[in-house]
Image 1 (cartoon, one colour):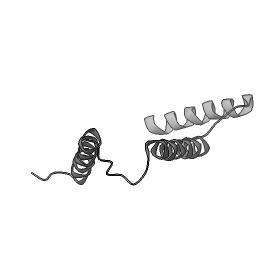
Image 2: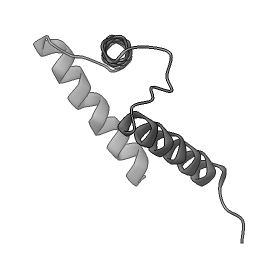
Image 3: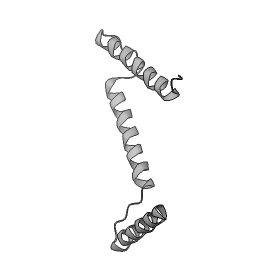
Image 4: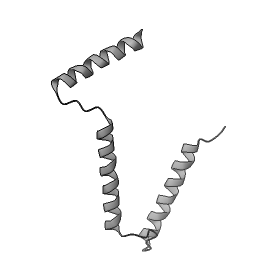
Length: 82
């Protein structure tokens, strides 16, 4: 039985975060930035991800666009079901 690559990645990330948490708890900061800088960086990443996700998805605001989405979904449903 082979362990998946994703399982190894998740396990590695968990180990790194656990080691970081232990070092932080004993007063050593293993990361080369402050807590405020980490917060700002994470906030920027989340904002960028939300922006890309919102841009990528189909956001229908007008009545015509919403009606077109419903029609598209109907056509897709027919295609799936034959």
